[in-house]
Length: 129
Figure 1 (cartoon, rainbow, N blue to C red):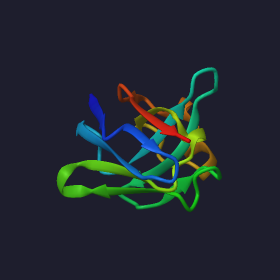
Figure 2: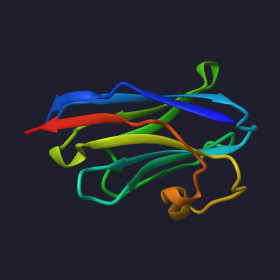
Figure 3: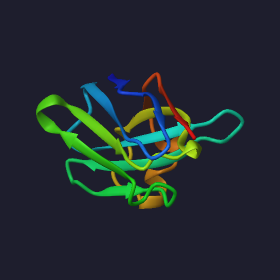
Figure 4: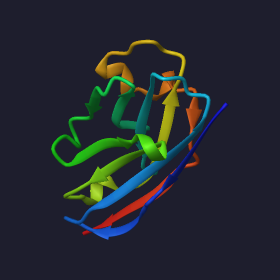
C-alpha cells in the first residue's frame, strides 16, 4: 500500500506562486511515477506534471511548461510542484498520484491518470484575477 498526502494549497492572486507538496509513504519500490493532476469544476481531469522517481525524467503539460516545476526531496519522501506565474485558469483541485505498476511510460502516458493506482485526497488551489 502507498499513501499520498498533499499540502500547500490555498488562494493566491494572478501572477503569484504556490508550492504544493506530496508526502509519499508505503511500498513504492525504487522506481515509480509520481504525477500531479488537476480537475476544475465541469472540466476533465488534466495531467499537469509527472516525474519518473528513481530515474529523474520529468514531463509537463503544455499549459504549464515554463511555469511549473516538479521536484523531489529524497530525504523527506516528498515530491513538490512549484507553481509560478499562476493564472485564474490554474484554479482547480490538485491531486498527486503514484503509478507503482507500469515499468515504463511515454511522456504522454505519464500525464494520463488512468494508469496511476494510488491517489491523494486532493487540495484546492484558487487563483483570483
